[in-house]
Picture 1 (cartoon, rainbow, N blue to C red):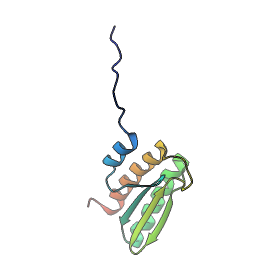
Picture 2 (picture 1 turned 90 degrees about the horizontal axis):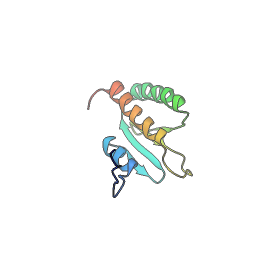
Picture 3 (picture 1 turned 45 degrees about the vertical axis):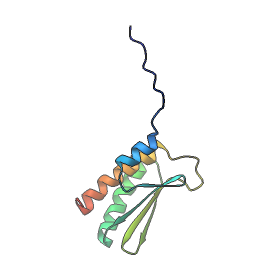
Picture 4 (picture 1 turned 180 degrees about the vertical axis):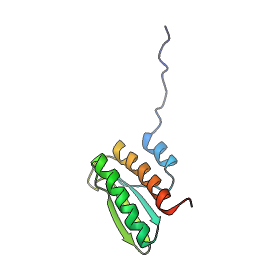
Amino acid sequence: MRGRKIRGIRSDYLSDALAVLGGWTRDGVQLKRVLACDDSQHADLTERIKVAADTLRLRPSIRRMDGHTQILLGAPDGVAITDGEVTLAARIEDAYRTVVGPQ
């Protein structure tokens, strides 16, 4: 019978996820991303985000500012960023690549 491996230090899940999700930053207890897109791309991206967010039962904050779309995931008064918010960030990245194309 094999024994369990014991790890000295457990890797930080959020840091690992943010490393994979380039462009996302931690803003307190929220994840933040600013994306360059025109008005029609913003509308398409917002609709795609809404569908994914509804599936995960999350409510991201999406704002249009100076030709950019700003997305905040997580409640500003929340305790911590959840797995669902990290999942939504990944889905937003996929949606952005679909709407705008590879950068």
